[in-house]
Amino acid sequence: MMKDTGILLLAMALFATPVAHGDVISLPATADNNDKTFALSLPYRGMTMEAVTAQYGSALKENAPVGEPPIIRWDYEKFSVYFESKYVIHSVIKK
Image: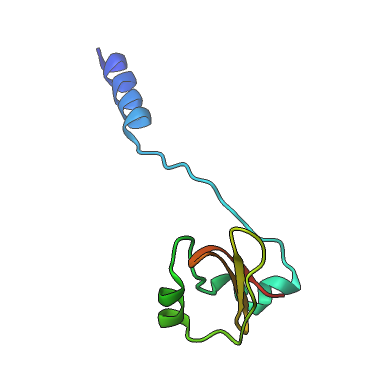
């Protein structure tokens, strides 16, 4: 009887203990990681030109539209924003 109780307690301890699993992401140590540009907040897809201007201020340079539909690039000091018509389609950090 005592042996069964010990096995039962051992089984309860093994299966009742919560186990957490997760992914660990580590960046290689490079000069790029030291400049902290990965922490930069960027305009996100779907923002309007008005919202980008309100949040990030005026661009240093607003390039002329290219192609059809028109793709427009606004250049800021640390990043560029690409618009299709008046909506953000992509933001890129400058090196």
